[in-house]
Image 1 (cartoon, rainbow, N blue to C red):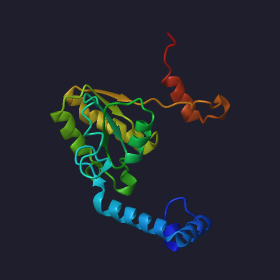
Image 2 (tube, one colour):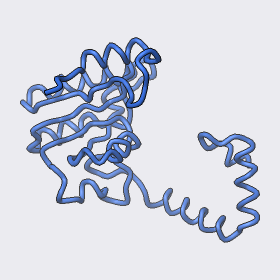
Image 3 (cartoon, one colour):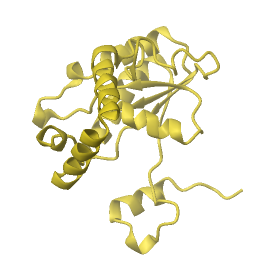
Image 4 (cartoon, rainbow, N blue to C red):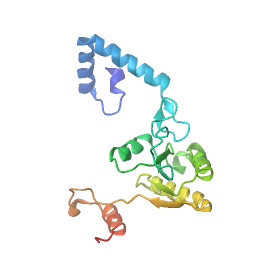
Length: 187
């Protein structure tokens, strides 16, 4: 139970339920243990884009992807969230974090250098900066945009705004301001 409680989102009650389940279903516990061991031993970062993978990731290995569009994210989870929309068909580059000088995270602690190499060597028409809408994410997006400017590649930033189904009166001022700035015509 103590080990399970170390996982994010698992409290004492959840850890107790999981432990009881695993003790009642030992074969399920063995399968889980094998899957965890396999993951820890075999899964790492794709050498090209830094998504989690066993070797080359499925995105980089998919010849049907649009190889002229690159989406830059902070974390592999962000890429999978974008992938889940079914709207993006290009490639990804994961920075493995965001610039955060107060925590000692500079460009050298991220995969910014590898990103610059990819853009320099590739034939990208557009790089979409999809970092989080935080102070660190915004600073990272601006920094990356400046680095890529000499290569003449179009850089864009994902829009931020109101969630679908949300009410304007419940939105915070930053979200509402961004929604106004990122507005588009209704042709």
